[in-house]
Amino acid sequence: MKRLKDKVAIVTGGSRDIGRAVSVKLANEGAKVVVNFCNNEEQANETLAEIEAAGGIAVKFKGDMMKQGDVTAMVVAAQAAFGDQIDILVNVTGGMVERKALDEMDFEFFEHVMRLNVTSTFLATKAVAPHMKKGASIVNFASQAGRDGGGPGAAAYATAKGAVMTFTRSMAKELGSKGIRVNSLCPGMIATTFHDTFTKDEVRSHVANSTPLGRQGRAEETADAVAYLASDEASFITGANIDINGGLLFS
Image (cartoon, rainbow, N blue to C red; front, side, top):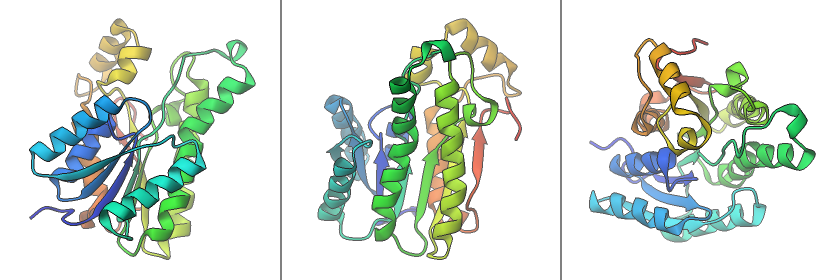
């Protein structure tokens, strides 16, 4: 029995790396998935092809989750494709953008990182929550950086992810009366394009070897956690910021 059969899910930033793994996993569990992307339509097409090859159902939506109009249009598109009710929202959209120390950051850079990670989560949650009913689930993506302050030059990113964690707790309280659960994941070193871009190979090796499990995580392992949190199996879990880091940091 598929855990998410006939559920409708929206995955922001759902076309590559962790977002793609989440989109594919939710579809494999029976959900009808809206795969949001912003720039790379080819990656979105590849994600849809993977879902459809496995017998799943999905549509793509191009939109910038930092823009309220795009977020509103995404909800309209989801309802046009799959009906009025939305059961699952996964906010994957986010990123570091660039490593910068305090003296290298200007207002525009800091504000952009906050908008990319925090404002996007706020806008999607605000737009989708009114269309959710009891039993629905929101899963946000924070980061281990939100707990420990991040590595060199990651202050803006870590601050933004800390805000996502706090927003998750607040929404769990606010939306709980409607039966909507809100949780977040705090990934550590996951083998994705993120670390290909922002983390040196020797640092990745050191971090991986420092974990009790002695390796980096996989995008699919974060997706498995999302599917669990979105399912009825996690019906009494809300307001949690769950670590997925191989034991590198205990919270």
